[in-house]
Length: 338
Image (cartoon, rainbow, N blue to C red; front, side, top):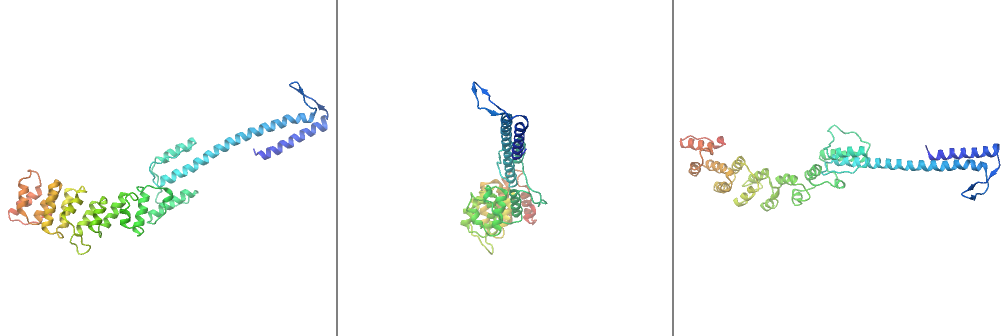
């Protein structure tokens, strides 16, 4: 019930009752004694409406109290609704360690589920939602996926956040950021993005630059570096010591060491190439096949046979087969045995 309407109706009722008693029943006055004190004489009509006034005041206070209680309850739901919107926004943005506080049981249940779930809009979802915060974040997500640059500062995303990484990747691709901008700010950009741009960086960078940011070195990057040795353009002059230092930072497999030797077969001087893989094989058994491949590829049959002769019976069977064929005067491409 609206308090204004209730007050008007109560006032009319009190006036009508008081008027009726005074006009049609009695106009006498009555003096009441209360706790030994005689009160002033009052009209009986006033005494009749007085309890009605007290009842009105009591009922008004009752309604005000429960109206306040209801208002506080609604306020809790409104705050929880806003908190739920923030929770959905954080879930869409894939924030880590999400934790939102809710006051009402129903929102607390939903909030706990959202805070501990991976939420992302489907590719077909492009509807307008009747909430600006959610609409804004959906627009941002779509723009990032479409390769556009957006402002994510107000969302306080960590560098490792996938949307922050993709947004920085978009900035890099559009030329807003250079590879060195990203590589020189280790704490500002995620290591995965640093490794990604390092591959482009090493295609033209100097040896000092390559070694300066080698914390972002990857297997793909090391092969880009190898392809520049004695190349026709962007030639890179690098010593075996520097190459060995770079390779030690990676966990190359036996096959990858062989691929590295193949990559250098047309660019590196034979003596340097042979010495490189000899040193690598002395430090890492996984590089031994690459060393044997290098020896056979360079027709250094004697040192290769010496290594095979002292190896275990089951080791390097493909190289032993190749060596036997060579001794029989058969000529095959060593690449057929790798």
